[in-house]
Image (cartoon, rainbow, N blue to C red; front, side, top):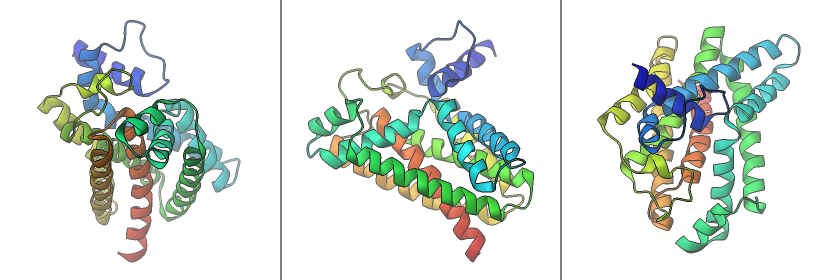
Length: 260
């Protein structure tokens, strides 16, 4: 139990800015095992997002509350996944060879593709969350929507680690430690924590389970695209996958509520 807590806090330390016990570090062995808790981190981030939204909605408009919840998400994660999304936009937008793409993604500066991509991503996320929350008829449903979106999108991202090879030959990427090896415990743990909130939400709206289909369709094509151009994935690719699949979750949920 003590070891599992250490692994969990390693995931918290690696994927968020939340303070952890001082004895927690980025040990490669624990980071490999911490991938099982990546979707569980989505529970934490999604829960914090909803709390900020819910409290803010007492004072401000629904739109402002959503923006504040988005800011909270960025602060909690340190823009970990948004940074990866921007790097992927720059790398694949400006590079035409594996070496050039990886070199651009390694650059800390954000180019035109990354800036444009982030603006469009945030606009789409904002509008979709506002519309989705308008459909939620209870606090519990709203909370589960936030948590499910963050958990399922992180499952989609980390599942690429289970099916594809790490692209870089050196240790310069932030996902290198989790790219080396995994066991069935990481796979089972990731899918358990990634799907449980969605199954809970299905007790209120059974059709919500269908969002798994579009989310993993996008995950499939993103992984295929990464494989085609850079022979695998990097940490930035995982971050981009999480962001895209989170938005796909919101859009799919809206479509389900409207047409089914």
